[in-house]
Image (tube, rainbow, N blue to C red; front, side, top):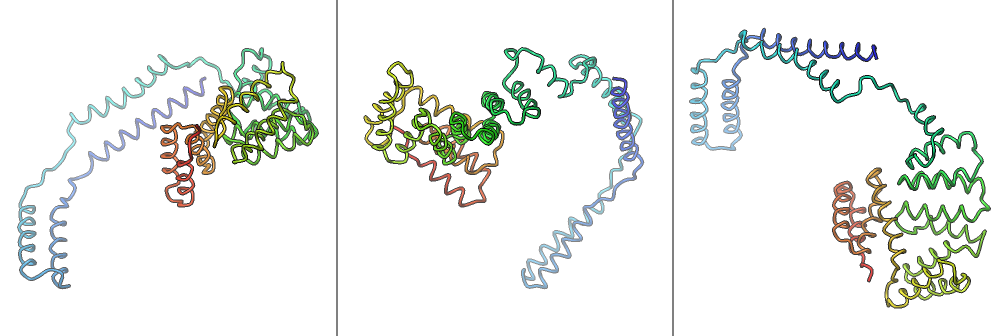
Length: 358
């Protein structure tokens, strides 16, 4: 704390000295030369140059020359007003030098915390490790688990929990990294591949190619896995193969126990898909999941906006959801960032024209 006050005092003294130095320097300077006569002499020279180059006629040259000469004569005869720093001008400067540090100190003592100890991250992390997990925020839990991965580098379960914490902390990119590490450690686990596919979908705001590949890897290990089959079936519908996607869902529904709550979700999805001639319908739960992925993509772009493909996906997602206000806002932001890239602008325009779901 003593070091803090010492440094603060030195900085305040340096700032005060700079103010006084500049004020004294201004007071010691003589009267600055009046630039007006120089300006009019330059105008006279430019008028003659234009006339010699044939850009203005002789009559125009004489008129302009006479006007500039008249203004030059008036400026030369006008008495200059010398500036001097009297005693009264020094008082506000000295008052500012004295009052500024006092005001800053008073504000700091009033609303600051001069007695608070340092809180390095390592110390806070150790506090979180010994605390009840129920009292921690998702980002704090993720920090604790991330530190534990240094000690247990080959524990896929630890990376699974880390991914769940990162996802709750609205950090889908970190969740993807954790799950990629988990599947690298335990590539035979279908549940980890499923979670990786869902993390990719959350990060992208749609079931993109990376998510589809992860779901296919999950089905290689467990052909009966429910979530991958559902997501891949929905993707078939969105890509235009409605009959194939519905057939996949019907096969999935036939294998689910009637008491399984997922059966009702699949049943409603089938009914809504079949009742829509061109595009699939979605249940309330499904729409909530879709909107959650879109919101995750929007939050990621707010933190890391340098992602043109992400902006294209976000604009398309808002257009498909029929949220025109959000679509236009995202489109305007993306156009502002990539106004010099015609290819990206074209992709954004096409995404904005996507047909909304019915």
